[in-house]
Amino acid sequence: MTESSLSERLRSYREKQGISQEILAGWLGVSRSTLAQYESGEKSPGISVLENMAYRLGCDVESMLFNPGGIDPTIVLLRADPGLQENEEAQACIRRCVRIGKEVSRLEEILGVPRAADSLPGYRIQPPSSRIDAVRQGERAAAHERQRLGLGSSSIGNVISVLEDSGICASIVPLSNEISGVSIMEGGGFHVFVNLNHPSTRRRFSLAHEYAHVLLDLQKDSKVVVSCSSDAPTLREVRANAFAAAFLAPEEGCLSFIHSAGKGRPSRVEYSTFNGDDAVEANERNKTVEQSIQVYDVLLLAAHFGISPEAAAYRLSNIHLLSEKDRDSFINGLKSGAHRGLSALFQTPSLCEGGEGSNLRDRLLGLALEAYRRGSITTGRLIEIAALADMDREHVEEALSGFDPIG
Image (cartoon, rainbow, N blue to C red; front, side, top):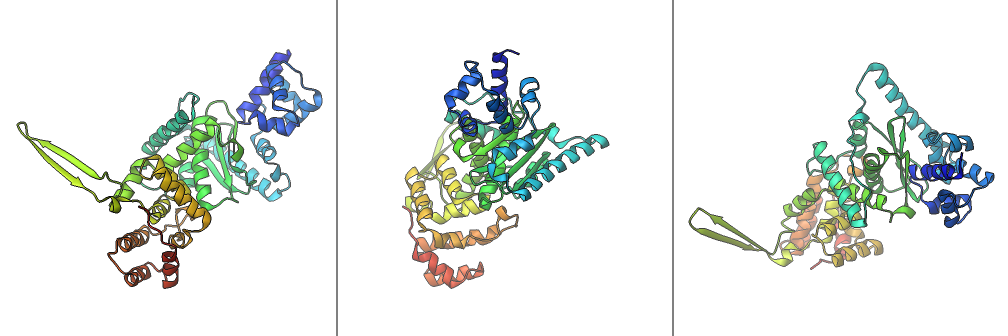
């Protein structure tokens, strides 16, 4: 075997598993430029380097040299996250999940039952050429998936159910903090793992993120994709993030939700009717102060779609319902704790925890806060209304102490 053939195999193993040169070079204790020379054939790795590389990529040296398909995704997952090496409970959970998926596939084959995973669409998308191209690809794929699944523009009750209905084994397991999720293709089946140690809204987002990897990446030649915080700027991760945001909170749904609160419409609406001879003009002016999106509107949207307040703010900004200035102000308020009181009003059983939540209760609170902001009701009346939503006076007063309207 020539060195050029070996170099191609080294690169192939790394790329198929979605591991960057920087990460693998760090694992091997060499510079990125040295690893690049190994992969281009300019330099030959020593046996100790080959053994370490094989270990990190979940195979042995012989497999790396002679069998480019000999990857064990489970081993790759364990080695990609060093923190799992000492966590026997997590390892047992991962192996059990993979085993369940394999057993399901095996039984489907025995019974002649159509495999759900076989119905997953294979999106033929070229690698994105830029970040904006990655965003557009992710959003288009999300729109197609929602249409294919008949989700319309409504919120998704249980993301795990969506994945499992598509034949993807989805599990929540303890991973290192920098890893949000891992997607694995094994024997034609798909496994998704998201981090148990992350907040519920982030786990929900990660499930949708990994769903994007299954649809857009694993069905090509990759065997494993590890979603790591250090890789967030890469085009593949940008695309998966855009997919997750659009899949969980579709633009049409966000617009409808904000419009239902009487907001998000242009300051002037003009309309013309034509009967064949004459035109009749109609127009409407909306007061800017009544159109401004408030902190609680963002929190309500987050609760409605089961995403984090930060993700909701960015989603509204990306569809031009919230200015960048107001978005950044809102996020800074979250970080500083300025919105703690208002956030507490919407901390109810939600989609993120698998409960049904109470959209009507949240809508009641949102309308009451808007009426209070406009001076239409008194503080006492707001407290009375909040009581209907099982919110006590102390919580309302705490929320109002940090109440800072936008616009």
